Image (cartoon, rainbow, N blue to C red; front, side):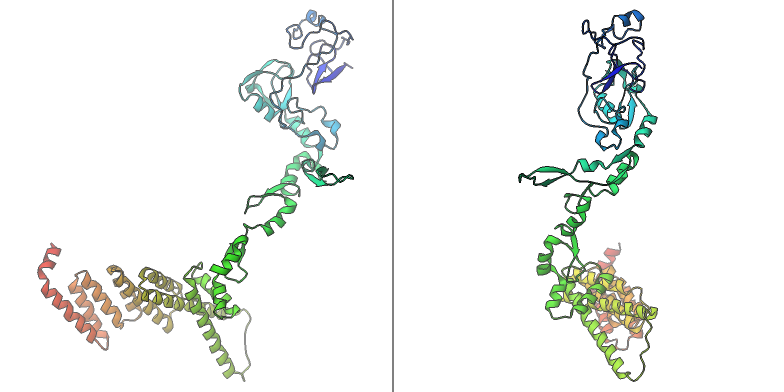
Length: 483
């Protein structure tokens, strides 16, 4: 058996000190197997010298008979491979050590020299970072980055080896030793053991020692502690305990309840908790998120819910002699309940819009009326729904008139007449919008149409006289406008 030694984590021939291929350490390409090591230390020749790398037999006979230890030129000290200590059988990986990072190969790559030296892929990437043509770190032979090739069979071999969880060597705990001294490092044990190819899945998806980042505050905690941290995290949004359906950061919850919580304001008014929760649920389902103006709307919803429940109780008391027949989960009853909730919301929005209109907040009133219309847009037409739609359309026409949006006035008057063709206010406001746009003939036609269906047309007659008077006074202006 050919003698060899280990120098600086690389195999070298003990006879000529020539760098050996770590996967063929029994054969030295330089001196052959017949040479024997000598204890003499004279005439030492470096493996990087021309004589040491000569291919002739005469050159080999001139070699020193003593091993010369030469430190390999390592480009950096960062660890790119796997620590030896994580492998169960460390003897099996002793032949697969990268001479740069001095760890077990991670994606082993042959550098392309004659001796076939192998290093980690990341180590070679860093090695060739500043120059793509450099001498090999072990035998100083000039190599090119383009000649680097992967060694797949070695990678498969390493990936099949048994390892323990690597995180147990990275985590430390503070405890007291027998003398009471602090900061004593103690390994935290993880019982996992498996193949190297499964190690990343274990650490990232299963191991309790893996560090995760809180998605709310950004603090890093181990997986086994992250759940407790999230429960206590001040930045985590939590539902309001008063059931206002708002999610507030834990650190802001007290301020929310004192200053902003609509449910707290309604409870302070004396409304029962169950009605507050029901009204807020109905509001959010049909209206959207709560805001500063929601208190009035939710208040109206609560009042209508109370009135509806009272009427149900009266009917039940009047029919107390008859057996009560209820079907759990009755689809028709659920639909009727949902319909009543939407009607309650629409009425509440209408009342809120009326209050805003009285305060001359026309834009906000317009928004309330429009949302009320959208809430009842898909409900089956009944007399109550028709009357409500007509009232909302008239209110929208009035607000649009205050805002001088004449085309919107015409549109909403037409909507009101579509629900009630005898609505006096709709005919009057329609003609008023046409008057403001100087469409006198159309305005008169609208008034004639209204007079035919409205029972008391005195107001329409006065409007017609007014339009005719204005038309007679401004004939020249109208002609100029037409031109």
